[in-house]
Length: 341
Image 1: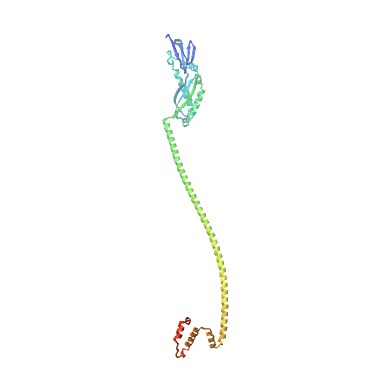
Image 2 (image 1 turned 90 degrees about the vertical axis):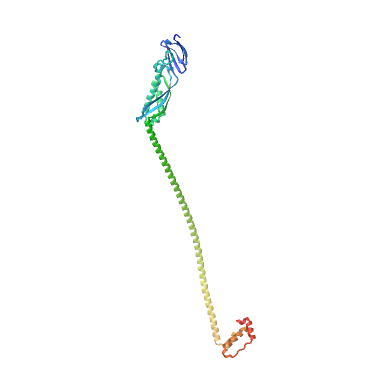
């Protein structure tokens, strides 16, 4: 009514009231009445502002990449930005009288764009795609020392790069190359696994052969030990046989001596007996035959005498005509065993 208005400012907006070319009041979160025909209100938002961005740049190897991210800032010094840009409210207090408040985020994005381009142009494609954190650190450091932001009274609260992407064609080429490298790595892994399996099989075969060699060596040692034992036994047996043979030779020599001595004794005895017989025969050769016969029959048994008598009768059978033998004499001779001789 009659140009008198009331305004209530939120805590995230710094308002400056100009009247008659002077600042009447200023502050955040205040409320007051003002006379609109002679008052200008400058409302500068001091809360944090998130501004997304996306732009394309070229790497040092002339490959295009797109950077997508977000910057968060706030107006730390409202008077500075109000002195450089028009943040005057419209006469009705709803909205701004100019487009400068909408241009401020773009100024910040342009500055980020320039700094990001300078960093991306230093990197090759592969390195740029993995340089999100280094880029954020480098750009954030340069924003902190930027004279333009200081002149506008702006404070950068945060910067993040959400994605760094190549063009679709380049992405497909990188995917193909990476896929080939992965396939090559898989082939190498298969080769290494097969090679390892072959090496393990070879090691197993070598162990088996070494085991067989060790077993054969042990068997050979056992056979050699057995042969040595048999050789020792044979040597002992040979020694025993040699000793037995020597003993037998000694016995045979002694037996030979005994036989020779027995033969000598027998020869001597035979010579003695022959000498005795010769002497007896010489003595008997001069004796009468009847005397010799009487001597021979002396000491005979009756039966022998009867047998001798029959022998004499048989010798003179041509001179005897008849010979009568009584049955009693014959029975006596047959009944007596001595007569059979």
